[in-house]
Image (cartoon, rainbow, N blue to C red; front, top):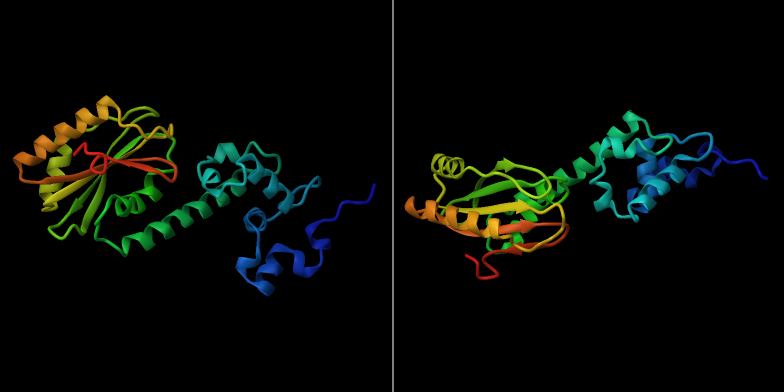
Length: 229
C-alpha cells in the first residue's frame, strides 16, 4: 500500500494556502477553505480530508454546518476545541457580513425585505426567539430588538416590553418576527392569538403592526401576505 501523502508533500499549487495565494480565494473548494481554518489533520488524514468528512456529515451544506455547535464539531476525530471554535467563528463572521450588507438597505417595503434582514439572525437557531423591528414613517428601520427566547417549540413574549420599546424608540410601526427551528412554517393558534393581542395593544398607542414573519431555513411565512394581518 503506498505511503500516505501529507499536505506538505503536495505540489504547491494544490495546497490550500498556497492555492489561495496563487489562484485567489474563489479557486478553493469549501473543504479547502475549512482545511485552512483547521490548519492540520492527523496521522490518518489530511486537513482537507477531515474537512470533507465534516462537510459530508451535513450533506455538503454550509447552511447546515453553521448550525453545528462546538461540541458537535468536536465529535470528529482530529477536531479539538480550538479548531471547532475557529470554524464556528468563521461561519459567524459570514453571517454578520451578510447582515451588514442587508442593513445598508434599511427601508422595508415587502415581506422579502424583512426576511433578508432577519434570516441571518434567526434561521440557524436551535431554539425560538421573538424579535421586533421598529420603523419610522418611511418604513425605515430605527432598530430591532429581541423580546423573548424559548425552547424548540415556543417562546414567551411580554406585550409590555414591546410597547415600552416602541414608545422609547418613537416608532410609528413595528414588524414581528420569530423562528420555527422545526422547519414548520405554519402559524400555530398560539402565534395567531399572540399577534392579535399585539395588534390590539399597539392600536391603542396608534402604532401599526405591519407584519409578522415566521422564519425558517431559506423560507418564511408572512401573516400579511396570507391575510392574517
